[in-house]
Length: 246
Image (tube, rainbow, N blue to C red; front, side, top):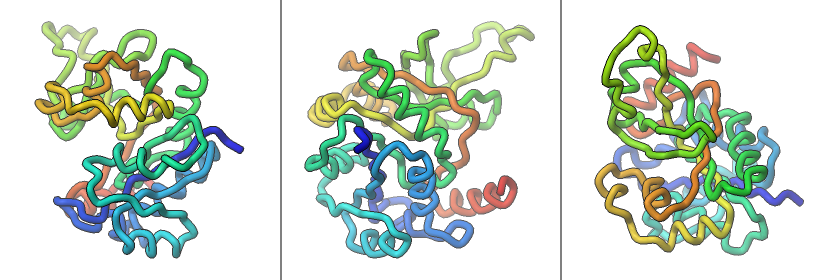
């Protein structure tokens, strides 16, 4: 049996786009695209964690297993922690249910980094970008990483700041953060039991809670990342992206 569990949080009651996980993208529910990539990664069992019987019923139609969790969970991380309580796996991978373009290779890389690096409490993924629209978009989170892959900071701001725009440093990419996390079971427990941290409150980025408490986050570098779904406009953009990249 694998020591990795992939858990996909799928809150039906999303504030900006209710039921977004079940919206159709290229003829399939958004969450089905995520689920199929996770299964293809072939690193362990895949479950969907949700507060809604509607999601449980819908995902059963494409063969997925869903776990009904409390509607009081404050975040997707809280939801996967609850869903994993009666499971034996040592490593839990949190794959966002609104990331339909997540690749199996990304899920595999995040799981493998966590399993092979004993200094790593949490693993995640980043991709290089020089796209000005992304760099200056607060919804595109930027990571600052050390030479050993350790995350130093995550921000909605443009970091690191390039003080002098020489031809050489214009070519230095920014690291776009991708919404996937791998946790050692003990690290996940520690994380959900921590209060929201000051930097987390300022940036609205929960991974800063882990960094502020001294936890080590390591980053796997991946080739590319497609758009996530937060709004109706995002869904339209995703349909366009799918047609351009299929």
